[in-house]
Image (cartoon, rainbow, N blue to C red; front, side):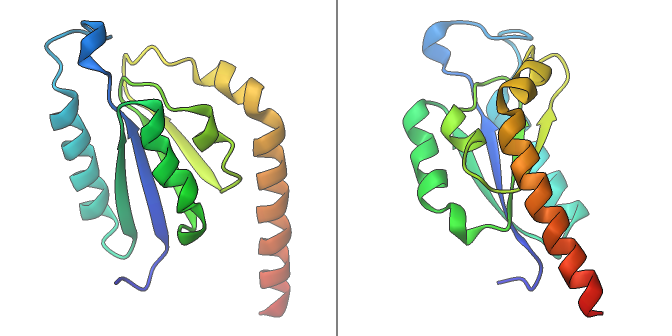
Length: 134
C-alpha cells in the first residue's frame, strides 16, 4: 500500500460485438489501456492507482460500489463509453480524452456541469480550510 492518494483509473473499452470502433478496427484498445496505465504508474510512483476497464454498463457497478475507497477518479476515454453513473459518482475527477476517440467531452461537461461545480466548490472549500490550518 502506498502513502499517496488512491485513484481509480477508469478506461472505456469498446465492445467488439458492435464492430469496428473509432478511430479504426486495427487499434488494439486492450494494449492501449495497458500502455496508458503503465505510463501513469511509472510517472507517479507515489500514487496508488487501481484500473477498471469498462466494457459494458454493468462494469461500472464495481467502481460506484467502491467509490469511497478512492480519493478521486481519473476517467480516460480511449474509445469506449463511460456510463453516467461513474460521472455522477460525486468524487473529484479528471476527464482525459485520447486522440481521435470521438468522445464529445464538451457535451459531457455541459450535461454534468452541476456535478463538476459542486465537486469543485467542495474541493476548494476543503483546500481553503487545510491551508488556513498551516
